[in-house]
Length: 191
Image: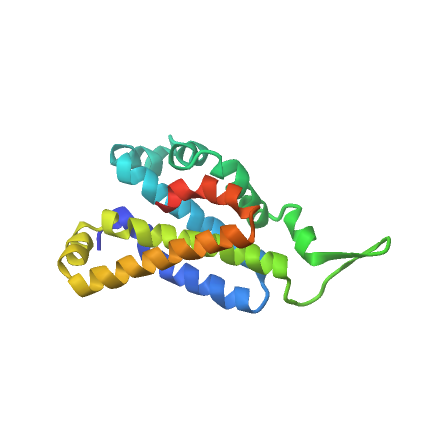
């Protein structure tokens, strides 16, 4: 294993964890893990093109994560990463999910219930990140790229799945026009 793309080795576990807790209504906790996946994908994309800066980042944190975001997908830091960071750091988002207002009274929701807004919020980000990881996989692992290029059957399956995922995103944009703005911002990190 090459440590250069160590984030890739953790991602299947993080994706699986998110799905597992998302299915049970843990949207807040899912968002905390989404932040990890997003930040890791940005780092993969950034250091793929700036490998010479990796050692300085690891040793001295000379590069700010915000600068990596701006390089890879301008606007994504403010639009999505800060929201997910609020989840991770226990900001006001916990109240949005865990506090319910009835008339003039507020009370804490106990347990997990299906909430369409938070369920779709989580899964839409997850889906986009999954596509981003899949799209940059062959670029990150040159041996895999050769395998993808030389294995006709695998290449066809891989290409079809990527195409299906992009079609799904287009369908989402058609059914929910408000999502177009977000996809415009996140698209550079996906492709």
